[in-house]
Length: 94
Image (tube, rainbow, N blue to C red):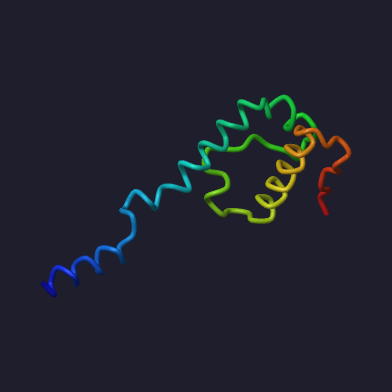
């Protein structure tokens, strides 16, 4: 009986499986798909030459965190403006 309880406790400590490691990649792909549905290529990307097309795993791989943060805040501001708050200011590069 003790072995069964010990095994049960051990199973709760394990992560949800090896596929859990790939969840951020899948979520980023979903994000890019949703942005395409909102037509971000024509709306967001054409606002400035500083904005580049977002790759499938752009926010998962940390190559340039400063650029990622700028893109994230710019996308968030664009989405807020698209949601109806046109007076919301876009972030500026420093």
